[in-house]
Image (cartoon, rainbow, N blue to C red):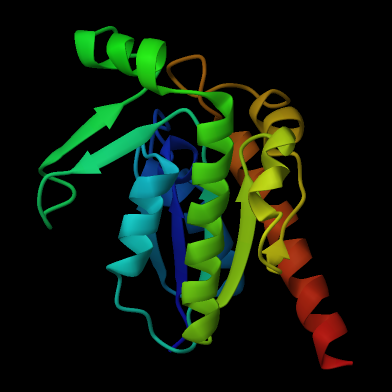
Length: 201
């Protein structure tokens, strides 16, 4: 049976919605497609965590995968295979000594760009080799450089401008609210339907 399998950060999980399991864009898209949902969105996720989640997931051959790739200045270091219970997370919004040291001494735009491009490249090749239909989009349009290496399905919707900033916010005043999630699900649905129609002609 077809499933919708989604990966991403808090924008995919539906953080700060009243009812994220039903109101997040993956849930509303799965409902429109009339297929079950497996949502691997996780607040604070880095693209490396998304990569780790994809590689460790058991896909069905008919799954439809959508990945909302996140911001490049996030990092995860895994201490063991229990990725969701034992890892070090580095990001720009947490004020601690590890984060300060990392961004002062070890981080650079060039490293971020190359690392995230290779992550996205590996994940798409991995899924292509499995024959899994995969769609990609990014949280900011300027991150489209993620897709410079591999030929992959891109959903170019300008998430930040056309959805995150356009519609009322969720409970924390920063994440996207219910209306934005609904409109994003509708926009993605239109893209998927149009691509399938063109491919069948």
